[in-house]
Image 1 (tube, rainbow, N blue to C red):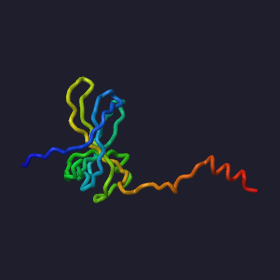
Image 2 (image 1 turned 45 degrees about the vertical axis):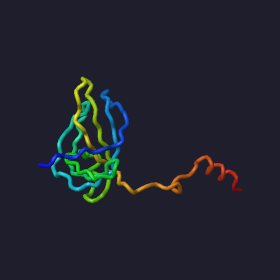
Image 3 (image 1 turned 135 degrees about the vertical axis):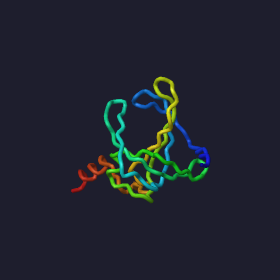
Image 4 (image 1 turned 180 degrees about the vertical axis):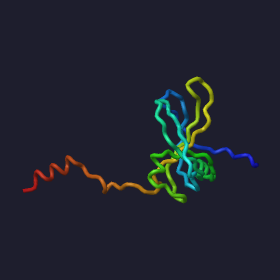
Length: 137
């Protein structure tokens, strides 16, 4: 089995709700396939969250295409009808646990489709609209 190449991403520092220091990088990943089976994950607040595992391809910082397996897709996202071939927003987290041990990287993909964007025409200024209505006779 070939050794996996290192993926270079742009990282920022964050702290998880559980108090873990992590580095986070945003990705835009193309969903290749997703498991039928789901698994439970219990977060730091004791809430059980279901997720599926997916294979995703994304470009790293230098444009190298990375294929990542075992990407977590939470139920809140896969229940939205995610389809193979579409590109979605995601993130990679790495860092340390609260006890100082090294965390395994945690890659997630969300149901927000890349390329679907809002335009300024979709928003208006409510105060300006009210003022215009008041001045119309």
